[in-house]
Length: 310
Image: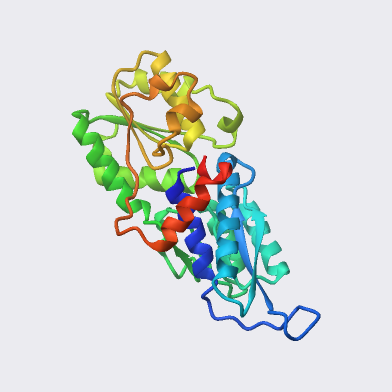
């Protein structure tokens, strides 16, 4: 997990503390500040569980800052496992409701955010995601009370098409994880690049490849179709396994990935031989703007925590 993503987690939790609240004191004495609970949906298990410790560490930093900034309330972050899964996201959200949260940060995966929203919106609990990018989440009638601090993949689809065009290759296979993130970004790329310019589209099960790094079936298929390039929508671990399989089969076309692989430590963290990532292109959102005091403070504290800084 890169530090920018961790910072988004912290900012979402900090902003959640500004939501108007009405609580009664839970302390044993009247002078004790009332406790306000903020839910935190984290993928502690599932296909992107590798990022869970970093998200949790960022949440701990945010909780410390929220409480250091004021003394009227005692903010408590209640963390639950959303598992990058819609059903688990809904169950986790119900746990947050039962715990009495006034707002929720998360989830990370789009499907988990959708599942969580079905519960949180029913109870009128606002939800702010730090990483869910599926274009469908922009529909406030389908997902009332949902907000996010990352852009929709409708824009990233155009960026992927542009990046591919810069390579000189034009007839790609799309290989994507079969979840709301993967399907949404694959569709956005197809819309931007043109369906007639797509060689083939292949999907794989996210949970199957969480433990199995064999992409031989997918690579055999796309090479047989004569595709001159690959656009992949994946997470870090499965994306590395796919690239390694392409190298093993002698694929020489361009490889372009989305923000799921666009982190500085991707080659070293996920490849047996990091040099196999050479030549892979990736796109991700950029967050321009001056360095703030909050970001400076967070960067320092994150650098002191091995989970946050990993």
